[in-house]
Length: 243
Ligand code: URA
Image 1 (cartoon, helix red, strand yellow):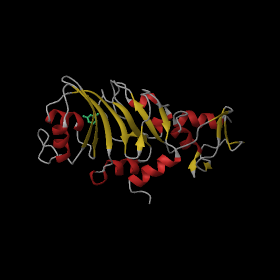
Image 2 (image 1 turned 180 degrees about the vertical axis):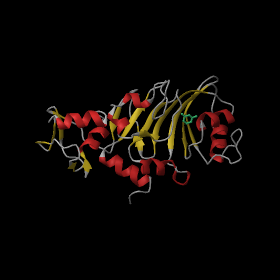
Image 3 (image 1 turned 30 degrees about the vertical axis):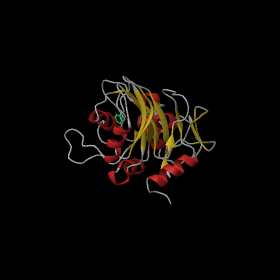
């Protein structure tokens, strides 16, 4: 059960005092009944209408976003636009947060969730899920670079080598190559630093998978959707929260 006014604040209807005013004015109906007491208790998921308009009352959300370049991966920032700007304002009040980070110029699959435990588990070093990136670099890639990435690389300023990573080369020329790189960790700028360690500079980077989740088809920058029930179960299994 949740207090009606608290529920409306969480759903982004307004501030505590604004929603209390609305409720007292008789503008809010829960399960078809007008409630005038801001402290009324309602069950989570109860259908609510404000001024006759139905609200999306889901308090728990996990969504997949195709992150465009140019946005910060952060819950908020004073100066720069963030990925949260792509979602309805209610996601902010619900406490939805990005799971991990993509660089400002990196595009692709970003997960955002209101479930703090799920996020924490997916990011914990003990449980890091596989992530696959499509990278474009400024020179050729060969079996030699793939071998070094499979063995593990010592990145600048670090003492622990990276865990074995899989490089699948799609195209390689003298001044350009394209490859999938699958890593099992989430170190700072890890993919760019791994390519740098083998003498290549990343010129474009897109994440195409995160654990059991995949971005299929052509890029759709800014597109987001809720996970399907099946995706949510697979993700919870990957996080060790479900059998
Ligand atoms: N590795 C990077 O270097 N950048 C990202 O955005 C993600 C992984």
